[in-house]
Length: 301
Figure 1 (tube, rainbow, N blue to C red):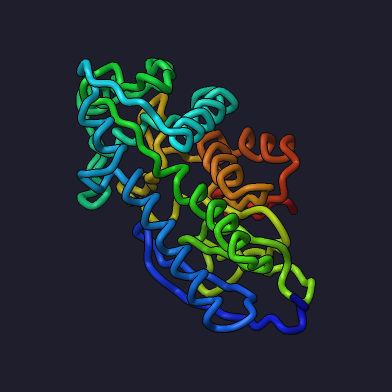
Figure 2: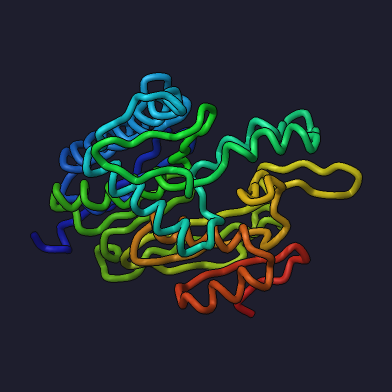
């Protein structure tokens, strides 16, 4: 199929609680609509399977059975995600912990209340990926009240999966955007890279940087959208799994990498570290990134 015959198509939809979009170069509208439906169906499948908001999801079933004798035999997809989560946990020295979602029960960002030491301690005792025995044939959470939360992985993973989905329909030039988690299949049809503007968290309507992509993925993390201020102190929704307290490191970061799921975990881990440690870690990894600290300084300079 000649590239000159390809036409640009774009559509938006909502999934995983986020505005999403597909920008694809296809032979015709019929092909585009077919690919779009396949992508939406795949995202819906992953949401039904891994969302903690759904009572019938695998994640909810595992969480409800925590501390009981019930175990789960995991399929290859779930096992791969948990194995990746385990690697991210090890590589981050325990900062990337998919059992830490339970900390939300101690923090109410709508009421702007800080939990007591007793409240935080009770929930913090339920956090700890090291407590979990990795067993594909018989997986379980060992303590009642523990939870796993795929929220820090599944949307990025879904973006990567959709690259495979569009390629299976012979679409080799496309960009998937799932609520800011982005994955691309090749450059645009004319060979130019996709240009993604990174919003400046302190200057609404302005871009902090523009990142060009012709493969892989891009993910962003920030403490500016879900937070509250009390007595002059800003409390982010990003919580340190070791202390239970909001982090006060990098304010926002966007990372590109060979896969969106990798970019996502790297951006999250850098946010959970103190500012200098997070920036040093990003530099050491060597992945393209742009970050801004609490004072508005943009990195790399």
